Image 1: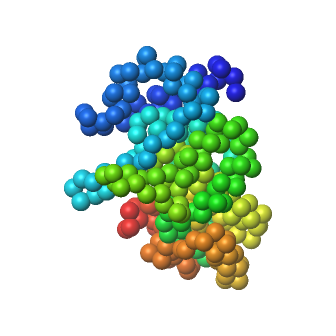
Image 2: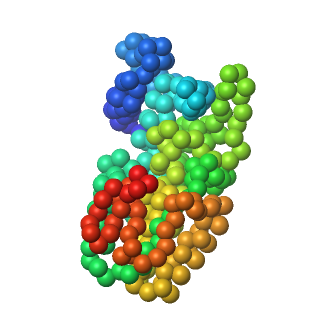
Length: 276
């Protein structure tokens, strides 16, 4: 990595953090980081590049009956910088619409709408993985990190991210399974782990297939092809230790309508899905 590229990515990661936490409370740590950034930015990059940076445990917050975990502002900045370094190295799904700059929800819904409007498909199966991030096997992720990321500094920071801890008022624990939500690395890693599903269905001419992170939809012309597609999806899920979400699963004739990313498709035209 060139020094100019490292500096460019540092500034891009900083701007990203400022946008993401621009509405943070007045006592949030991001404001202290922003105040001290002009003096600390060079030192920060030196610490990261020399492999001395250590991520802190994620903090658990509770407010108004809700709870969530969050990286510190400095850790979020580091993880965004790391994500920018490893994004070109990790294998990607053919249509990774869930990644920023690759179409997003609108790109995926347009792809599905085009296939639906051709009127050549008769059956649909739509499902997603229940608690996808929470059930990912850490060993599988670690193997992928060692395979694709040769830079020791970036790989070490990714491993710190993988084996993260949570601080609940001084009680610190490390989850045995799963990856954390709410970091720039999560969609990169989560998406790359499902690339084999996309690769398999992309080679099947008898089906239309689309995926958006852990959401999947399949169109077929015959019941036989539908059964085979569903059976193969289940095999992929079983191999990864995943379960389908029963409340988000649909199977049947396509003219009865189906939900894809908040849009309900019927012969009358697309509309907002009841679940959305």
